[in-house]
Image (cartoon, rainbow, N blue to C red):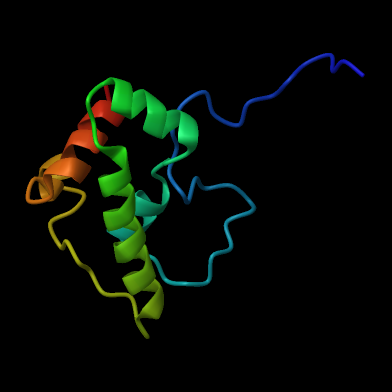
Length: 106
């Protein structure tokens, strides 16, 4: 079986909440939670980051920790009140994550 075509939902990275009819998280995400959930750490992305000299696994572990903490909250609470206005500079104190984010947006 050969498909006639393949439809891509997005040719690039997109946010976790990408504003279509199927948005149903029910968690109460903050802007940074939404952003962190949009990050890709698939084997391909981690391998490409490694070839660029970026330690993606360290970034992945930090994001995993933050998302787990967010899921344990009774109510949404901002970890980074200045985000998204401060952009990727928000993550400067975490060099591995900041480097991964810069690589991702190249």
